[in-house]
Length: 364
Image (cartoon, rainbow, N blue to C red):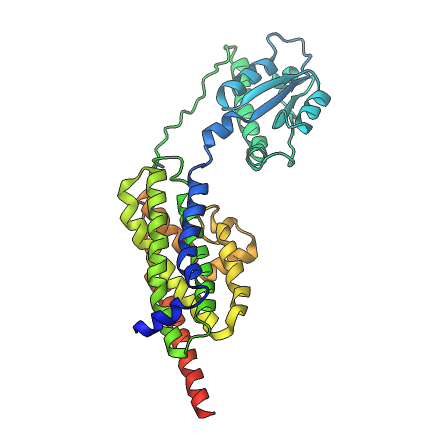
């Protein structure tokens, strides 16, 4: 149907409908994958403030030994403060990220049999990464200091010198290792770009073809997404390959994102053809809740309960799992049944609504 394409080219939104999905893929992927977060660098820039109020008569002070153990075992910078008020002021000013306070009788309690209260002060006004790390520190300190004190008390009961060595040594094996800093956020970036490109491309294509004859626009809405999403997915695959330095993922990144984009575009266009732009009331929330629903930023079970319920009903995270399998070589693949069903429903709505409208016009 060359005439259908020619009609489409005369639309004022023709260029936007063709180009914008690719521009979205290019801009969003570049900005997100060329400046990924480095967990090691983030941890090394976390500054822990320590206030040692211990005035026990034992020597050396157990608190001093504990502070040395903390400094060696945690990848943080450490700053010492004379009193809690000074440390709180530094925390308020963002000079440190968290504070741990050893009480005045820490050494005496450590050599006794009772539990010890150590205070940790956090604040949620800092950066998101600092807040997340700080929220985990109370349990980390509790476990680490408990092991240290238990070892100290056991050595004392046996009249032995305490050992600074940990009784348990952990051997780490990483099943699927990220080959670059950009590899870790890649599944999320690919997933979000897929949904965003499909949504914006579908809106523009719907508006650009709205004045065309019924069957011609149904044809254009079926064919054009294959081309526009192919170009958008190609750009996405190129950026992912270049930023992750994983040349072997280029083809699968392109094919997976192309197939998913086309299926979603057909489904969105089917909804637009049926109820118009009112479909955005459903589509926009689904797209912008992808950080939680895709399972690429947080596990679906960690999402708010109402989002978890939606994600359990519709397997949005299967797309995120497919992209993780591409980047990391983990188990998973395209959710063909789900995507195929979405594409079929979209095409059925697209063609069915236009055919029905055409028959109703002929009757009147």
